[in-house]
Length: 318
Ligand code: NAP
Picture 1 (cartoon, helix red, strand yellow):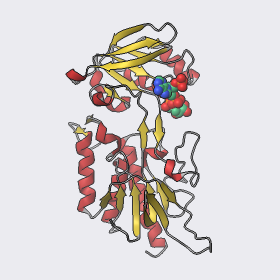
Picture 2: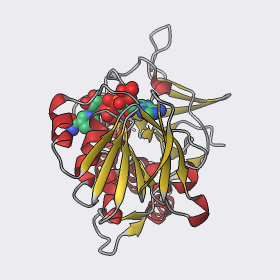
Picture 3: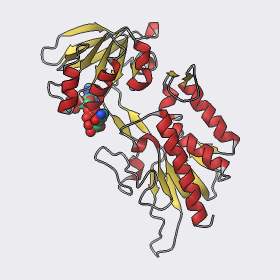
């Protein structure tokens, strides 16, 4: 276990954290990347990625992320499996003297001059028995990533917020029919998005309805959903080729507490592009992005965070 003070510690080994690691390692800063509870981030659990530039035939998400990891390792980045419990970004002791940034993983405390928080956001799932086994085989939380694979098919979108409406509208370009399934009769979605979805011919709504199960693990593809009307208790099966979750994301920033600016849903709010109010602390990727959430945008801000960390270290003479 490395115990020395680090120039750069990166929390998160998804697309953003690994891009930051590649840049920081190539700048001879020997970054340490903490894997967190979802090593590789969301790319590690997707299948074909067709919109990452440079891959005309697409690339498997796990392969893309593994290549980024190898690239970071090649330039000297180190990796540590662990779960960050808290961080202390104050950098000041009670007597006013300067101290490093502290990153606490259980009983261990790591010290750093700069910290890049690239801990991502986790899609919320329904928690169905067969759901996780079908991720990448018809169960998805990213319409932009996976919608194209369901051209000419009937699909379901779960949720009643703007994400669900946006996903349904996007998916209606490919699918012959999109059914929005929402557990209530009232919607959180903004009026304009809801109306747009309502007026779309291919989009249908099922309200007061929940998903009890998704089939068919034995075929390694989604063939349908078991639904239940919450008012009548009636259960029935809806044949679909995909289930897209639009029930929100949870940013993985709990360990920051109130030390950095966060919005009402817990997303970090960067100062400028990737800065923060704590000196030497930079923010990148989906932990601060509720809007774009793309691999390429996460990589972009990871690069920016590493360049800012490098600049900061130069400024403090390290
Ligand atoms: P959201 O507004 O929190 O909506 C989540 C939806 O999922 C709600 O309808 C909720 O149902 C449902 N849901 C949550 N957990 C569920 C569960 N376990 N089972 C079934 N349904 C469940 O999240 P969001 O749609 O991701 O939006 C988050 C924020 O981003 C919002 O401020 C939104 O306006 C913004 N956003 C904006 C755009 C845009 O403007 N283009 C696009 C996407 C997101 P209940 O209503 O019953 O709680």
